[in-house]
Length: 104
Image 1 (cartoon, rainbow, N blue to C red):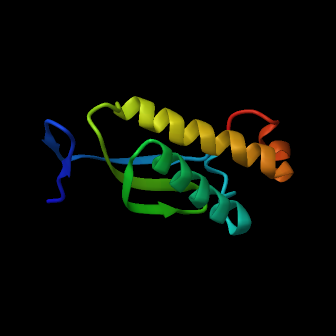
Image 2 (tube, rainbow, N blue to C red; image 1 turned 45 degrees about the vertical axis):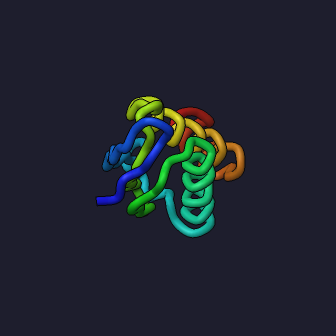
């Protein structure tokens, strides 16, 4: 088991999350899939989260991460979904047309 160390503690906190695209439309393909993967990596790096396993499929995302006790699972998922959705809708106009410019 991989343990992470901080100043006064040793911890091994992991979570496996899965989320789908709205209406399960298969839109995470090609350039969108690659950009989504890159965005998720960036968010994890800024929050000091290690990605243990991850798959971006055409209509859903699996992500197993190791995180620090300072982060809550809800905050991690909120940031990952929010940032990726916002950036993908900005960068790919076809997604904005498909979803009406809102929730992805």
